Length: 308
Image 1: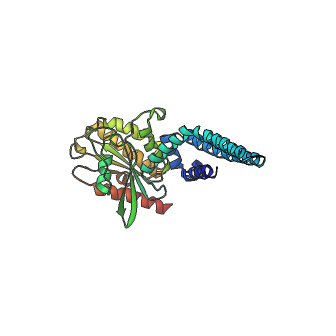
Image 2 (image 1 turned 45 degrees about the vertical axis):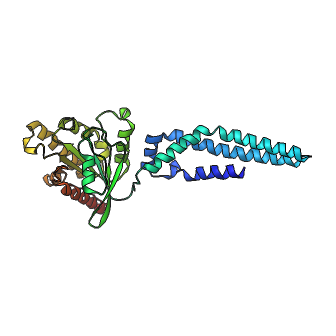
Image 3 (image 1 turned 30 degrees about the vertical axis):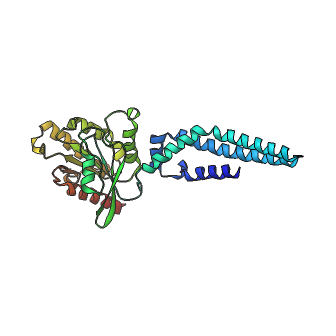
């Protein structure tokens, strides 16, 4: 009984309590493992621990009335049998929690309170390439959508400070209810982490999405960018220069930059300097201005933090 009690207590103590963790991790837990199922599994283990203790108490009382060694042995055997039956019924809960434990150990350690850059955008626009260029991370880069299926973290230094850069999976422009687990991880990171958001636009449209579609996604994510410094970075300028864009596409990008500046202006009319400070071009293939993008994003977050 003591062994069962100790083992179950260790399981209950080692798994994180949903109410005690940061809202970012709470939401991530809900997206990846379903919060209700997780609570239910831990609840069942807690109930079983109490039942095992109860069985032990009952049979200790009965042992006092055992009139022979044989009777006492039979009582002990019955008690252990009942305990084993209780624990056996927990099989599915233990199996589920073991899966959660294995998956949790593979999750990147994200510090929700440190200086952070969140890289977001459509699939295949060059988010992972950017992370590989500016940090020590080594994320798999392939020429197809949804290569990145979970959150990846890279670390970099700027002004003698350590920064974490989070590479989020690509997000598609559709209602929240229809988004899958991979996309919801990005939404969770954007919603809960106080960070500078770097929205990457593929101007060459090689990712399979037009600039107009990328702009629509940007505007649909706008509620998540509130109170966050925001930078719009146009990638793949080695394939297609900004000057080669049509009048319509150029206006679409200008609208995005104006919206990014407006989130910073907090209701006031954004100035031209604000717009220039929210927009930058780069090419992750040729390394053109990649470092400038990192510096601009870091500066924006530092300025905002100092102001607060």
